[in-house]
Image (cartoon, rainbow, N blue to C red; front, side):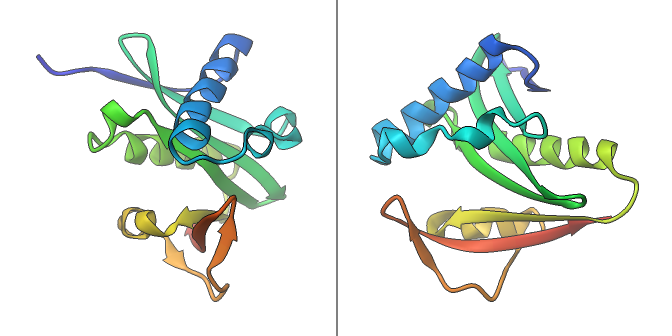
Length: 151
């Protein structure tokens, strides 16, 4: 039996809390990111978009989109529950984020993200390229900035 996944833009407090729960499990519990760094004021900005992926109503992945300028956005807090990794959910989340941004804009959209180094190849397969920025530590984890332009 194959699983059917639902990917949707968050539009309720319950969904947002599901996103936070996934992020807590992945970043705080697994990767030992300090809890105080995980949720910030950008989570609650009206322009911020949260995306959630569910399997049979169970939240299993999330992503956050922050607006940096009129046509510039930053993807972050991309997380998939451990038991669901390797099943294409990260791709579904990023593709849904792209679709949401294309709904907002008819022109070109610039997207950046800070990839944990182990995930660089994943983002390259989705059309992202490394920027000139040097690698950097965020919450004790090495990252590289990547970018992509949507038509």
